[in-house]
Image (tube, rainbow, N blue to C red; front, top):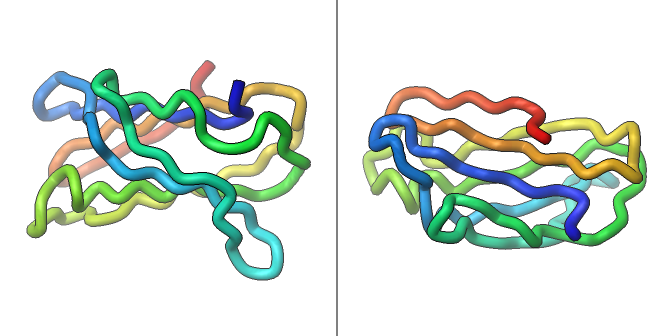
Length: 107
């Protein structure tokens, strides 16, 4: 199982956001892409990145413009987070609507 997974829910429609491209990046000397994926029909990316990650700072970059359309107020969402307990799984969901988004550490 990937150490990092995500789930995108469309709050405006009350449905999963399918087809959203997502990138996992690590902060090293700049940002390095570790993995790329796309949300499935349930709005999830279940297999994103390596099975092992070191302690450090990472980010998920969501191409929300490809989902919300060319006039999207938030064409991209970047969620930066720290992994301090590398053996644990980290689930980072996003709740999305046309003019707002929120995120949290899931389980």
